[in-house]
Each structure stands twice: as structure tokens, then as C-alpha cells.
Image (tube, rainbow, N blue to C red):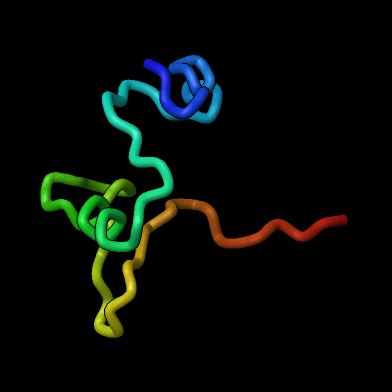
Length: 68
């Protein structure tokens, strides 16, 4: 697979494995549709909040790492 110059090996180095499709730099509507697809589970799925934002559970990550 080759996506905008990236190979499967490049994606694997980033922890992206066993995928058949990569959505790269989508417009707002496409991103919204992809993030809220009903077939997504776990960390892959976004949730629509009361304010209309999409919230995504990132697991153990809690924010920026302080530079030192």
C-alpha cells in the first residue's frame, strides 16, 4: 500500500498496522462521518458531546509532556 508517499512499513513504524484505508487530511464533514461511524469501537470511535464537539478517548495519554 502507498498513501501520499507513505508505505505500509512507514505506517507500521507509527503503530498503524492491519489497515486497508487511511483517511488523510479530510474536510470537516468527512472527519465527522469517519469519527462517528457506528461500526467503530474503543479508541477508534469519537463521541458527540452536548456542545457538538467530538471527544476521543486517547487511553493513558493525559496531555502535553513538559519540555525540560
